[in-house]
Length: 216
Image (cartoon, rainbow, N blue to C red):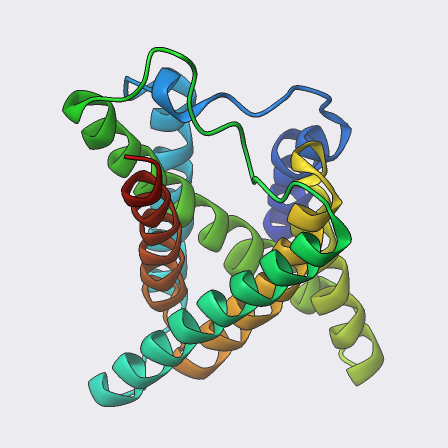
């Protein structure tokens, strides 16, 4: 890929996709109001697909299937372990750790659950292709090829992802920070964004499922 195109693409994506969540003050939407496959969700899905296809064209995967399964499973376990740790720490600190308002007084039904699952899948795929794949890898390519700059790119990307969750509270930021590190490691080890995206989706879906079972 020509460096000029990469620079243009990187700064365009940073301006329109990375910076806005860092500046946003909008509160998370309660889950039972996320009933439809919204226009923003559709745009995110298309952007994620574009990043994914671009990566497929530019890079070939040489990691075997069993290695991918192992790292995806390990990643999922570490995500749950992180969530349990953050939740426990917040409990003893007397803090509310809800990542977003769960439900309004109207409750939730099967239609909501279907669209929640669809939205969660698109969100997980979008965040993995944006933060773990495109944003980090592009910075690594554009910055001088020295270890210190690679470390900077990794840290900057992880912090950007974590701070995009700040409207949900600082425990959510900490959780996103640790999970971001785990998910990035999964991508590095498997060479496939589908592995961390799968773990991310199952993790989000499982947390909500456990919450539903607990409340109802």
